[in-house]
Length: 115
Length: 112
Image 1 (cartoon, chains in turn yellow, red):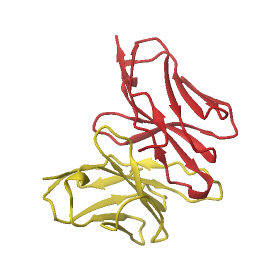
Image 2: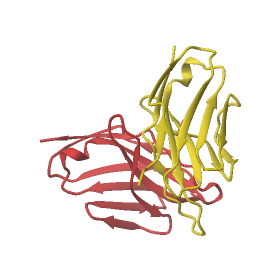
Image 3: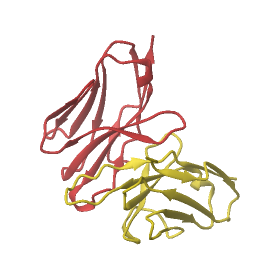
Image 4: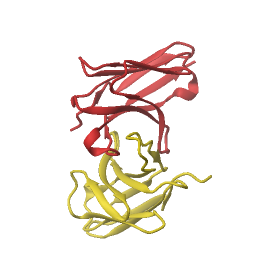
């Protein structure tokens, strides 16, 4: 049973460019969340997708956008890249049930470097 | 800045117990989590505790929650070299399930 997968593993971009990161959730999961983890810090919540809609959003500018596809996979897009966008981007998937608790499974992340 | 605070570093000898501490500020937190991150890897959920509990034990792991002081701790018994990693405390609230608020992480180094 494949866990959460992300692509690419590493990415180098220059300031002002745009980037798209991809995530496939764990089999059976329908919710995808994205986090940004800067070096030496804890992950920061970017947004969450469920039923192809953005359900929650953290304190990130509109340059960060996303999409969820009918097969539950997701993309994170970042426009007009800044040096400060350099980070590990983590995708987490979970399953919506009647219970509140939804364990989130994290992928290995995409390391983005902005030069 | 984070609302969840952790000490940054812990050194422990193999076979001893490790205790990692965390404080959180949101009294409406519903679930509190401990995640482990090894170099180059994503986050692995170790254990979690519901906010109406005081303690949870899971094999070598014991979580203690003091709601009055908003203090959470993770005790690892018989610490092994494979336990060397960064440990993150995280909280979520009932009105925003799935949105985890993480601390900055505690680096645990286990020495032989």
